[in-house]
Image 1: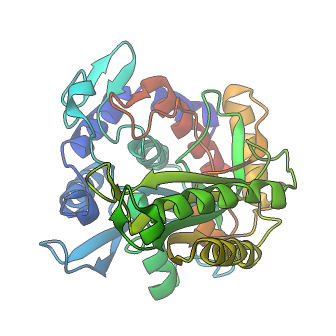
Image 2: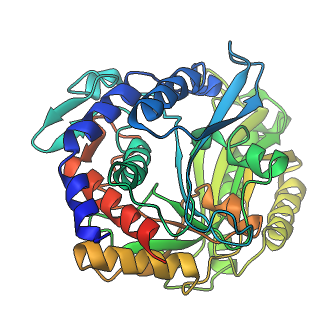
Length: 411
Protein backbone atom coordinates (compact mmCIF):
# COMPACT_ATOMS: atom_id res chain seq x y z
CA UNK A 1 0.00 0.00 0.00
CA UNK A 2 1.07 3.57 -0.70
CA UNK A 3 2.41 5.08 2.52
CA UNK A 4 0.45 8.27 1.84
CA UNK A 5 -2.78 6.47 2.75
CA UNK A 6 -1.39 5.42 6.13
CA UNK A 7 0.07 8.87 6.66
CA UNK A 8 -3.27 10.54 5.98
CA UNK A 9 -5.09 8.10 8.26
CA UNK A 10 -2.81 9.05 11.13
CA UNK A 11 -3.27 12.77 10.47
CA UNK A 12 -7.04 12.28 10.48
CA UNK A 13 -7.13 10.52 13.84
CA UNK A 14 -5.87 13.16 16.24
CA UNK A 15 -9.09 12.88 18.26
CA UNK A 16 -8.24 9.28 19.01
CA UNK A 17 -4.74 10.26 20.11
CA UNK A 18 -6.15 12.90 22.44
CA UNK A 19 -8.62 10.37 23.84
CA UNK A 20 -5.88 7.83 24.56
CA UNK A 21 -3.68 10.48 26.18
CA UNK A 22 -6.66 11.50 28.32
CA UNK A 23 -7.34 7.92 29.38
CA UNK A 24 -3.73 7.20 30.28
CA UNK A 25 -3.22 10.43 32.22
CA UNK A 26 -6.30 9.72 34.35
CA UNK A 27 -4.50 6.71 35.84
CA UNK A 28 -1.48 8.00 37.82
CA UNK A 29 1.24 5.38 37.45
CA UNK A 30 3.64 6.27 40.24
CA UNK A 31 6.26 3.92 41.64
CA UNK A 32 6.14 3.05 45.34
CA UNK A 33 9.30 5.14 45.76
CA UNK A 34 7.11 8.09 44.74
CA UNK A 35 4.21 7.13 46.99
CA UNK A 36 2.23 5.30 44.31
CA UNK A 37 0.87 1.84 43.55
CA UNK A 38 2.68 1.25 40.28
CA UNK A 39 1.35 0.91 36.76
CA UNK A 40 -1.33 -1.82 36.92
CA UNK A 41 -4.48 0.30 36.64
CA UNK A 42 -3.00 2.24 33.75
CA UNK A 43 -1.93 -0.92 31.95
CA UNK A 44 -5.34 -2.54 32.46
CA UNK A 45 -6.96 0.52 30.89
CA UNK A 46 -4.45 0.40 28.02
CA UNK A 47 -5.07 -3.33 27.46
CA UNK A 48 -8.82 -2.79 27.24
CA UNK A 49 -8.38 0.12 24.84
CA UNK A 50 -6.03 -1.85 22.57
CA UNK A 51 -8.47 -4.76 22.37
CA UNK A 52 -11.33 -2.42 21.50
CA UNK A 53 -9.27 -0.99 18.64
CA UNK A 54 -8.33 -4.37 17.20
CA UNK A 55 -4.86 -4.90 18.68
CA UNK A 56 -5.58 -8.24 20.33
CA UNK A 57 -2.25 -10.11 20.42
CA UNK A 58 -1.28 -9.05 23.92
CA UNK A 59 1.06 -10.66 26.43
CA UNK A 60 1.91 -9.57 29.95
CA UNK A 61 5.19 -10.09 31.78
CA UNK A 62 4.53 -9.14 35.39
CA UNK A 63 7.47 -8.47 37.70
CA UNK A 64 6.74 -9.35 41.35
CA UNK A 65 6.83 -6.40 43.74
CA UNK A 66 5.44 -6.84 47.25
CA UNK A 67 5.60 -3.11 47.92
CA UNK A 68 2.42 -2.44 45.89
CA UNK A 69 -1.08 -3.71 46.63
CA UNK A 70 -1.31 -5.73 43.41
CA UNK A 71 2.07 -7.34 44.14
CA UNK A 72 3.04 -6.91 40.46
CA UNK A 73 4.57 -4.38 38.09
CA UNK A 74 3.14 -5.10 34.63
CA UNK A 75 5.08 -5.10 31.36
CA UNK A 76 2.92 -5.43 28.26
CA UNK A 77 3.76 -6.53 24.70
CA UNK A 78 1.40 -6.00 21.76
CA UNK A 79 2.20 -7.85 18.52
CA UNK A 80 1.23 -7.05 14.93
CA UNK A 81 2.22 -10.07 12.88
CA UNK A 82 4.46 -9.41 9.89
CA UNK A 83 4.82 -11.19 6.56
CA UNK A 84 8.04 -12.92 7.65
CA UNK A 85 6.85 -13.89 11.13
CA UNK A 86 7.43 -17.60 10.48
CA UNK A 87 11.14 -16.91 9.93
CA UNK A 88 12.78 -17.20 13.35
CA UNK A 89 15.82 -15.30 12.10
CA UNK A 90 13.88 -12.28 10.79
CA UNK A 91 14.17 -9.00 12.66
CA UNK A 92 11.18 -7.49 14.45
CA UNK A 93 10.41 -3.79 14.81
CA UNK A 94 10.14 -2.78 18.48
CA UNK A 95 8.68 0.51 19.71
CA UNK A 96 9.40 0.70 23.43
CA UNK A 97 7.69 3.17 25.78
CA UNK A 98 7.27 3.27 29.55
CA UNK A 99 3.99 3.58 31.43
CA UNK A 100 5.19 5.03 34.73
CA UNK A 101 5.41 8.76 35.38
CA UNK A 102 7.03 11.07 37.92
CA UNK A 103 5.14 12.92 40.67
CA UNK A 104 3.58 16.29 39.87
CA UNK A 105 5.96 18.20 42.12
CA UNK A 106 4.81 21.56 43.47
CA UNK A 107 1.10 21.58 42.60
CA UNK A 108 0.85 25.38 42.85
CA UNK A 109 3.08 25.67 39.77
CA UNK A 110 0.51 23.85 37.61
CA UNK A 111 -2.09 25.85 35.71
CA UNK A 112 -4.31 22.77 35.27
CA UNK A 113 -5.09 19.52 37.08
CA UNK A 114 -2.04 17.38 36.19
CA UNK A 115 -4.16 14.20 36.10
CA UNK A 116 -6.72 15.58 33.65
CA UNK A 117 -5.61 16.32 30.09
CA UNK A 118 -6.36 19.86 28.96
CA UNK A 119 -6.14 20.72 25.25
CA UNK A 120 -5.14 24.27 24.41
CA UNK A 121 -3.52 25.88 21.37
CA UNK A 122 -2.52 22.57 19.81
CA UNK A 123 -1.03 21.23 23.02
CA UNK A 124 -2.10 18.66 25.60
CA UNK A 125 -1.22 19.46 29.21
CA UNK A 126 -0.90 16.87 31.99
CA UNK A 127 1.58 14.74 33.86
CA UNK A 128 3.03 12.10 31.56
CA UNK A 129 1.56 13.40 28.29
CA UNK A 130 5.06 13.80 26.86
CA UNK A 131 7.07 11.53 29.14
CA UNK A 132 6.39 8.93 27.91
CA UNK A 133 2.82 8.89 26.63
CA UNK A 134 3.77 10.78 23.48
CA UNK A 135 5.95 7.87 22.43
CA UNK A 136 3.43 5.31 23.67
CA UNK A 137 0.52 6.89 21.79
CA UNK A 138 2.53 7.55 18.64
CA UNK A 139 3.77 3.97 18.46
CA UNK A 140 0.29 2.64 19.13
CA UNK A 141 -1.32 4.73 16.40
CA UNK A 142 1.43 3.82 13.94
CA UNK A 143 0.56 0.16 14.47
CA UNK A 144 -3.15 0.90 14.48
CA UNK A 145 -2.82 2.68 11.13
CA UNK A 146 -1.56 -0.57 9.60
CA UNK A 147 -4.35 -2.62 11.12
CA UNK A 148 -7.14 -0.23 10.15
CA UNK A 149 -5.84 -0.05 6.58
CA UNK A 150 -5.29 -3.82 6.37
CA UNK A 151 -1.55 -3.49 5.87
CA UNK A 152 0.60 -6.48 6.76
CA UNK A 153 4.03 -5.13 7.67
CA UNK A 154 7.08 -6.85 6.12
CA UNK A 155 8.41 -7.59 9.61
CA UNK A 156 6.52 -8.31 12.82
CA UNK A 157 5.92 -5.21 14.93
CA UNK A 158 6.19 -5.31 18.73
CA UNK A 159 4.93 -2.55 20.99
CA UNK A 160 6.59 -2.84 24.39
CA UNK A 161 5.15 -0.93 27.36
CA UNK A 162 7.52 -1.24 30.31
CA UNK A 163 7.21 -0.42 33.99
CA UNK A 164 9.54 1.35 36.38
CA UNK A 165 11.64 3.44 33.97
CA UNK A 166 11.58 6.55 36.15
CA UNK A 167 13.21 5.00 39.22
CA UNK A 168 15.69 2.46 37.90
CA UNK A 169 13.93 -0.13 35.66
CA UNK A 170 14.37 -3.00 38.13
CA UNK A 171 10.78 -4.10 37.46
CA UNK A 172 10.83 -3.06 33.80
CA UNK A 173 13.46 -3.64 31.15
CA UNK A 174 16.05 -5.02 33.60
CA UNK A 175 13.54 -7.62 34.77
CA UNK A 176 12.61 -8.51 31.18
CA UNK A 177 16.23 -8.89 30.09
CA UNK A 178 17.02 -11.08 33.08
CA UNK A 179 13.91 -13.27 33.08
CA UNK A 180 12.61 -13.42 29.50
CA UNK A 181 14.14 -13.87 26.05
CA UNK A 182 12.12 -11.27 24.16
CA UNK A 183 14.67 -9.86 21.72
CA UNK A 184 16.72 -11.15 18.81
CA UNK A 185 20.20 -9.78 18.07
CA UNK A 186 19.06 -8.23 14.78
CA UNK A 187 15.86 -6.65 16.08
CA UNK A 188 15.16 -2.98 15.30
CA UNK A 189 14.53 -1.20 18.63
CA UNK A 190 13.35 2.41 18.86
CA UNK A 191 12.75 4.15 22.20
CA UNK A 192 10.69 7.34 21.66
CA UNK A 193 11.69 8.92 24.96
CA UNK A 194 13.92 11.85 24.10
CA UNK A 195 14.75 14.20 21.28
CA UNK A 196 14.51 17.75 20.04
CA UNK A 197 11.87 20.03 18.56
CA UNK A 198 12.80 19.11 14.98
CA UNK A 199 13.24 15.38 15.42
CA UNK A 200 16.71 15.84 14.00
CA UNK A 201 18.76 13.87 16.55
CA UNK A 202 19.01 10.11 16.94
CA UNK A 203 20.56 9.16 20.28
CA UNK A 204 22.95 6.27 19.75
CA UNK A 205 25.13 6.57 22.85
CA UNK A 206 24.96 7.57 26.49
CA UNK A 207 27.60 8.67 28.90
CA UNK A 208 28.42 6.20 31.63
CA UNK A 209 26.44 7.06 34.74
CA UNK A 210 27.67 7.01 38.33
CA UNK A 211 25.63 8.35 41.23
CA UNK A 212 27.33 8.45 44.59
CA UNK A 213 26.05 9.02 48.13
CA UNK A 214 29.05 9.93 50.25
CA UNK A 215 29.04 9.69 54.05
CA UNK A 216 31.87 11.47 55.88
CA UNK A 217 32.24 10.59 59.57
CA UNK A 218 34.25 12.76 61.97
CA UNK A 219 33.67 13.87 65.55
CA UNK A 220 30.98 16.29 66.68
CA UNK A 221 31.92 19.11 69.00
CA UNK A 222 31.02 22.65 70.06
CA UNK A 223 31.53 25.28 67.36
CA UNK A 224 33.96 27.18 69.59
CA UNK A 225 36.25 24.16 70.05
CA UNK A 226 37.07 22.72 66.63
CA UNK A 227 40.31 21.49 68.15
CA UNK A 228 38.31 18.91 70.14
CA UNK A 229 36.40 17.51 67.16
CA UNK A 230 36.81 16.49 63.55
CA UNK A 231 34.75 18.63 61.19
CA UNK A 232 32.98 16.23 58.81
CA UNK A 233 31.47 19.11 56.81
CA UNK A 234 34.90 20.61 56.14
CA UNK A 235 36.27 17.27 54.98
CA UNK A 236 33.15 16.68 52.90
CA UNK A 237 33.57 20.02 51.14
CA UNK A 238 37.18 19.20 50.32
CA UNK A 239 36.22 15.78 49.01
CA UNK A 240 33.41 17.20 46.87
CA UNK A 241 35.85 19.64 45.28
CA UNK A 242 38.39 16.87 44.65
CA UNK A 243 35.72 14.72 43.02
CA UNK A 244 34.58 17.66 40.91
CA UNK A 245 38.19 18.13 39.81
CA UNK A 246 38.12 14.67 38.25
CA UNK A 247 36.69 16.51 35.25
CA UNK A 248 40.31 17.58 34.69
CA UNK A 249 41.56 14.00 35.07
CA UNK A 250 39.04 12.42 32.70
CA UNK A 251 39.46 15.24 30.24
CA UNK A 252 38.96 13.74 26.80
CA UNK A 253 36.32 15.32 24.58
CA UNK A 254 33.79 13.76 22.24
CA UNK A 255 31.71 16.12 20.10
CA UNK A 256 29.01 13.46 19.75
CA UNK A 257 27.89 14.50 23.22
CA UNK A 258 26.61 17.75 24.71
CA UNK A 259 28.48 18.82 26.72
CA UNK A 260 31.38 17.04 24.99
CA UNK A 261 33.22 16.16 28.20
CA UNK A 262 32.76 14.16 31.40
CA UNK A 263 31.05 15.84 34.35
CA UNK A 264 31.47 15.19 38.08
CA UNK A 265 28.97 17.37 39.91
CA UNK A 266 28.06 17.62 43.62
CA UNK A 267 24.27 17.68 43.90
CA UNK A 268 22.11 16.74 46.87
CA UNK A 269 23.26 17.78 50.37
CA UNK A 270 21.67 16.12 53.38
CA UNK A 271 21.12 17.92 56.67
CA UNK A 272 23.74 17.42 59.36
CA UNK A 273 23.44 19.38 62.64
CA UNK A 274 20.35 21.52 63.30
CA UNK A 275 22.19 24.47 64.85
CA UNK A 276 24.97 26.82 63.75
CA UNK A 277 27.25 26.42 66.74
CA UNK A 278 27.87 22.68 66.47
CA UNK A 279 30.60 21.19 64.34
CA UNK A 280 29.08 18.17 62.60
CA UNK A 281 30.40 14.70 63.18
CA UNK A 282 28.72 13.40 60.04
CA UNK A 283 28.19 14.95 56.64
CA UNK A 284 26.40 13.45 53.64
CA UNK A 285 26.49 14.67 50.05
CA UNK A 286 25.80 13.19 46.64
CA UNK A 287 27.55 13.27 43.27
CA UNK A 288 26.08 12.91 39.79
CA UNK A 289 28.84 11.82 37.43
CA UNK A 290 28.31 11.49 33.65
CA UNK A 291 31.42 10.01 32.06
CA UNK A 292 32.33 9.67 28.41
CA UNK A 293 32.21 6.00 27.36
CA UNK A 294 35.91 6.04 26.46
CA UNK A 295 36.44 5.66 30.22
CA UNK A 296 35.28 2.71 32.31
CA UNK A 297 33.63 3.01 35.70
CA UNK A 298 36.50 0.90 37.06
CA UNK A 299 38.90 3.69 36.07
CA UNK A 300 36.66 6.26 37.70
CA UNK A 301 36.31 4.30 40.94
CA UNK A 302 40.09 4.03 41.20
CA UNK A 303 40.40 7.82 41.13
CA UNK A 304 37.46 8.27 43.51
CA UNK A 305 39.11 5.93 46.01
CA UNK A 306 42.35 7.88 45.69
CA UNK A 307 40.53 11.10 46.56
CA UNK A 308 38.78 9.41 49.48
CA UNK A 309 42.05 8.11 50.89
CA UNK A 310 43.68 11.55 50.65
CA UNK A 311 40.80 13.23 52.49
CA UNK A 312 40.71 10.54 55.17
CA UNK A 313 44.42 11.02 55.81
CA UNK A 314 44.28 14.82 55.78
CA UNK A 315 41.33 15.23 58.16
CA UNK A 316 41.25 12.01 60.17
CA UNK A 317 37.72 11.20 58.96
CA UNK A 318 36.17 7.98 57.72
CA UNK A 319 34.53 8.07 54.28
CA UNK A 320 32.10 5.53 52.87
CA UNK A 321 30.07 5.78 49.69
CA UNK A 322 27.35 3.86 47.95
CA UNK A 323 26.28 3.90 44.30
CA UNK A 324 22.51 4.38 43.91
CA UNK A 325 23.08 4.04 40.16
CA UNK A 326 26.02 2.82 38.12
CA UNK A 327 25.47 2.16 34.43
CA UNK A 328 27.84 1.84 31.50
CA UNK A 329 27.01 0.65 28.02
CA UNK A 330 28.51 0.54 24.54
CA UNK A 331 27.19 2.79 21.80
CA UNK A 332 24.90 1.71 19.01
CA UNK A 333 26.92 2.25 15.81
CA UNK A 334 25.82 5.39 13.98
CA UNK A 335 25.33 3.32 10.83
CA UNK A 336 23.46 0.46 12.51
CA UNK A 337 20.34 -0.79 10.68
CA UNK A 338 18.04 0.78 13.27
CA UNK A 339 19.71 4.18 12.92
CA UNK A 340 19.63 4.06 9.12
CA UNK A 341 16.01 2.91 9.01
CA UNK A 342 14.92 5.62 11.42
CA UNK A 343 16.84 8.35 9.60
CA UNK A 344 15.23 7.31 6.30
CA UNK A 345 11.78 7.47 7.91
CA UNK A 346 12.37 10.93 9.38
CA UNK A 347 13.58 12.16 6.00
CA UNK A 348 10.57 10.70 4.20
CA UNK A 349 8.02 12.18 6.61
CA UNK A 350 9.43 15.61 7.42
CA UNK A 351 12.40 16.15 5.11
CA UNK A 352 14.75 16.47 8.08
CA UNK A 353 18.24 14.96 7.92
CA UNK A 354 18.56 13.34 11.34
CA UNK A 355 22.05 12.97 12.80
CA UNK A 356 23.44 10.66 15.50
CA UNK A 357 24.22 12.12 18.94
CA UNK A 358 25.23 11.03 22.42
CA UNK A 359 23.55 12.23 25.61
CA UNK A 360 24.48 12.65 29.23
CA UNK A 361 21.11 11.49 30.49
CA UNK A 362 20.26 7.87 31.07
CA UNK A 363 17.61 5.85 29.23
CA UNK A 364 16.54 2.23 29.09
CA UNK A 365 18.59 2.06 25.90
CA UNK A 366 21.69 1.60 28.03
CA UNK A 367 20.42 -1.72 29.43
CA UNK A 368 19.58 -2.99 25.96
CA UNK A 369 23.01 -2.05 24.64
CA UNK A 370 24.64 -3.74 27.61
CA UNK A 371 22.77 -6.89 26.65
CA UNK A 372 24.03 -6.68 23.08
CA UNK A 373 21.01 -5.15 21.35
CA UNK A 374 21.24 -2.10 19.10
CA UNK A 375 18.73 0.51 20.22
CA UNK A 376 18.23 4.20 19.51
CA UNK A 377 16.29 6.93 21.29
CA UNK A 378 14.34 9.43 19.21
CA UNK A 379 11.28 11.66 19.14
CA UNK A 380 10.23 15.15 18.12
CA UNK A 381 9.43 17.00 21.32
CA UNK A 382 9.91 20.15 23.37
CA UNK A 383 11.24 18.09 26.31
CA UNK A 384 8.95 19.32 29.09
CA UNK A 385 9.34 16.05 30.98
CA UNK A 386 9.24 16.27 34.80
CA UNK A 387 8.31 19.97 34.65
CA UNK A 388 5.12 21.62 35.92
CA UNK A 389 2.65 22.12 33.08
CA UNK A 390 4.20 19.28 31.10
CA UNK A 391 2.78 19.22 27.59
CA UNK A 392 2.93 17.44 24.28
CA UNK A 393 2.22 19.04 20.91
CA UNK A 394 -0.51 17.24 18.99
CA UNK A 395 1.37 17.78 15.74
CA UNK A 396 4.33 15.94 17.28
CA UNK A 397 2.10 12.98 18.13
CA UNK A 398 1.05 12.83 14.48
CA UNK A 399 4.59 13.28 13.17
CA UNK A 400 6.10 10.60 15.39
CA UNK A 401 3.33 8.14 14.55
CA UNK A 402 3.92 8.73 10.84
CA UNK A 403 7.66 8.19 11.18
CA UNK A 404 7.11 4.95 13.10
CA UNK A 405 4.55 3.74 10.59
CA UNK A 406 7.01 4.39 7.77
CA UNK A 407 9.61 2.33 9.62
CA UNK A 408 7.10 -0.48 10.07
CA UNK A 409 6.34 -0.53 6.35
CA UNK A 410 9.96 -0.61 5.17
CA UNK A 411 11.30 -3.91 3.85
